[in-house]
Length: 85
Length: 242
Picture (cartoon, one colour):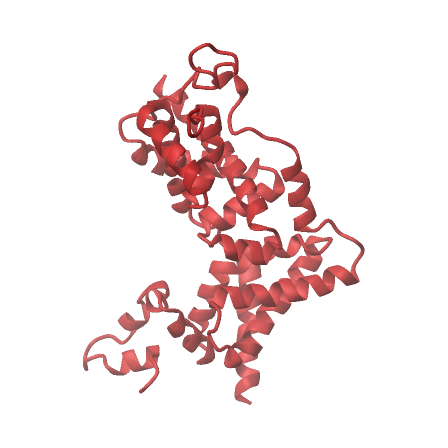
């Protein structure tokens, strides 16, 4: 009997996040990495998931609507003034 | 030791230099250190507060909306949260991060409000229902059938390269617009998790605490969201390659 079944590509794509999060059990991690060494398609897939995460990290957060910000700064000034009284 | 503040920096400015130049310093840089930011708030520096608002206000509002039934109530809760932050900053001890502290004020208030208002679908039940259905990362036609003689469940249509310099293309304004659209099209729970994790760079623990979900559900939502966004990028970038 073989120790453990080889990982298929279909299985691998569903484990990519667990792999990147570092939560794959050691056995699965080994199967995952063994598969990657042999499979250019999955290597590309993993790389594209990494690129996707990186691209998301570079998106700027939406700016706060001016009106909301002004209201809050007003709150801040009132707080500051009340404090110094 | 003296605490760090902008006035002190200004006092150090050599005679003849324009003190304004000091204040033009980017507050993000000046307050890169969290202790400096807390100190700035305590000293009543508006820049410090504006920086925090810019960083967290939108996320506070989005999270609040998962706890209360309407946007109007969510806005009130967030306003109360900021007031709570100002009133409590003097007692903030730095045992958790400033962000964790601010969001704990929010969730506390939002839960109380949510209970007072009519019943509302919580994020955790929303996430449960989204996680229940199965959602493969890719359509089944991307893989060979299970009964394939040599390569069961291996690629039928492997992903194609995203071109010579994908990094550059991913940074383009146009791609960024597509990315934002792809996120906006995600189911609600997936959308919030990927925003907090990948755009705002929260840890999984922080996301679980604020949204009240398990690590497992958080990962399922993140995985589905990332897989969908990758798919969106794939079809968009592939078109460009003709």
